[in-house]
Amino acid sequence: MSMFSKKRRSNLLRKAITPVVLSSSIFSCASQITNAGTYTWEVKQDYTDTSYYESNPGSIENSSKFMYKMCNGDIRCWICGRVFSLSNRDDSKQMRSHSHVCNLKLEYDDVEKCLTISGNGKLDKRALINQELDKKGIVLRKELKKIVVKGKVNAVSDFTFASFCALNSVDISHVSNLGSHLFGYCTNLEKVIFNENVETANFDAMFYDCEKLKTVTLPKKVKNIEGDLRSMFEGCKNLTKVENFPEVPKNCKSLYRVFMGCCSLNSLKIKINKEANIRLLSTFYGCEKLTDLSIDDWKNVSVHHLEGDESFLGCAYKNETYRIVPKNKEQQKNEEQQK
Image (cartoon, rainbow, N blue to C red; front, top):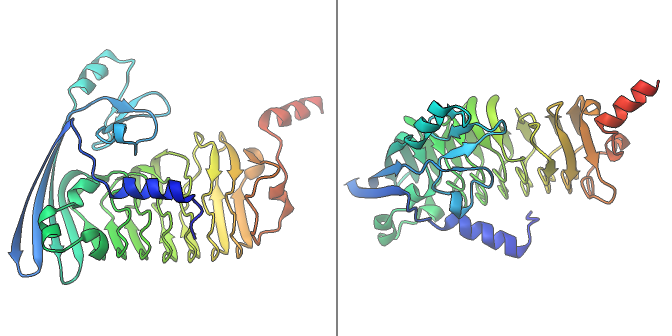
């Protein structure tokens, strides 16, 4: 069930399948046939551009950058996790010379339709594009069913697995940094194995339109959450269970379409950071089987449901508590002082 306009859907799809040529990093690829039905290739990427992004990491202008600005103003390396303080002169100097060389080895079994990725560093979508396979009529985006990422590959960038329409299973249990839109349009995806402890994750549109996804167990602990979880499970019409849903961070402004169209979901528990100021925007639209909804300690945070919003339209949950716009913290404080 897709809720995006045709134009926006087309733009997302084109972005997901189009390789980006990066002027600031060296990208090289060598491939060979090792035995019948098995193909291997190696990818080397040099990351040297230490300019950082502050928002929208998936945009073309930010696609070569591996440094980002955190909420507290510090700069963090997306590959190794090192943090630099701009107010510290030594940190600023070291950041300018910070770089990474990522070496990846990819092995594709054309019989099992399985791709195994090993090596070190950051994996992005370009590594999965192999012209030699294309010449042989092997199109991974249409045929690949299973992906296993192992070794010291500790980061997967935005859109890496998006639009792999035959993909059924992904093992990224060794990866500690996750980009946004990872599995968007993976309409046959049923299983994802995450690392239990993740350093950084952007859950925006992570499972957008994953129609066959029924249950998912997310990382138990996420140290830094980028983005605001928008459209995280939008269009997952067979989703029935979500384990370890991440605590909504204080920098999140709205839960935009997070579960929109999840018409099989019947229960859900959400925890929100007490410093957050959240708006519900079409959050549970079309969740026609959702009868058990729990938002932990929601009265102590600012959770707004705007009049006229469709967050609960077509939703089975009927507790009127969530249909009332709660008082914000300042109003609560003033009323307590008056008493």
